[in-house]
Every structure is written in C-alpha cells, then in structure tokens.
Image (cartoon, rainbow, N blue to C red; front, side):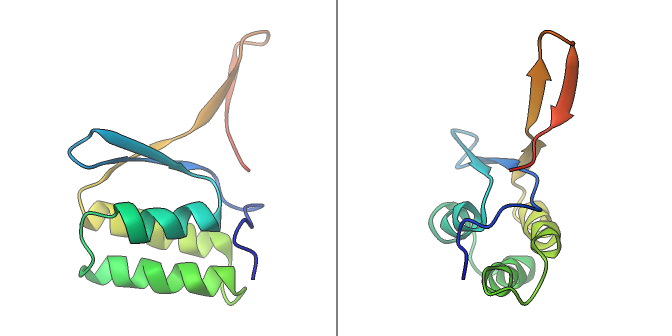
Amino acid sequence: MDWNAASAIAPIGFVLRNRSTQRIVRTLGDAAYVLIKDWPIDDGEEYVTAVKACVDAISGKIEVEEFRHALLRAAREADIVTFSVVAFDAASGKTAELHS
C-alpha cells in the first residue's frame, strides 16, 4: 500500500463546510483524509463508490486516475465546489496544471 502514491493524480481543490474550508488533494492519503474527515455526506452512492475506489487505488487494484474520476463524481453529488490547481511561471507567463 502506498498512501502517498500520486504519480498519476492531478491535484484537486475542494471548497468544503459552507465554503469556509479549502483542501487540496495531491495524494491518495490526502483523498482518504478528506473523504473520512471533511466530506459533508457519508451516505451518497457516489461517496461510497469513491471510498471503495480510494481503497482500491491504495492497494493497486485500480489506477489512480480512475479513483480521481470517482472522487470528482462524489464531489458533484455532494455539491462540493472543486477547482484545478495550476502553477504560474512569471518568467514565461505560462500556466500549467500541477501533477504531483
């Protein structure tokens, strides 16, 4: 098990708890923490699927990107605002989506 495996997941930002809390998920460990500690509902179908997918990704049964999609579906189900995390290179003026 690799709780911090993140080679294939692009970071996702979440706005939680009446928009007063933001979390950035970069690793499977981050995702597990957010799902268990910060998620506003724990009985949605997509939520349960995301929790199972997280366990499966940690144990190597599915690809991290497959889990990422399940996590985004669960966020949509719970009306959680998500955002992409991007880097800005001031020297070049270019932005790029971050990948851990």
